[in-house]
Amino acid sequence: MDYKILLTVFATVFIAELGDKTQLATMLFAADKEVSKWTIFFGASLALIATSAIGVLAGSVISDYISEKHLHYVAGTGFIIIGAWTLIKA
Image 1 (spheres, rainbow, N blue to C red):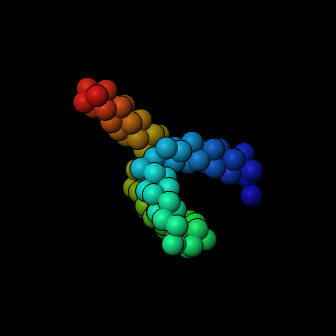
Image 2 (cartoon, helix red, strand yellow; image 1 turned 90 degrees about the vertical axis):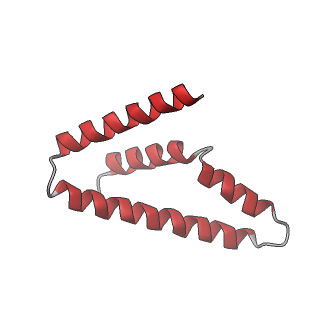
């Protein structure tokens, strides 16, 4: 196992998820006094695992048809466009 990649992916996803609408929704569910916090934790964890699995599978399939270099360009351009759009709409 490549621990450098593991830590890079962990840090990137961890930082990206902090304050995200997913975390806020999870906090709202956890605020309900009548619901088990473990149920919320496991539900949110399974959802993140499932979405991550979809991302890994999609990335594996897409990489068979598009080079890694071009994927980086597309992803970078997408982030720039989303960032610019967010700034314009703010």
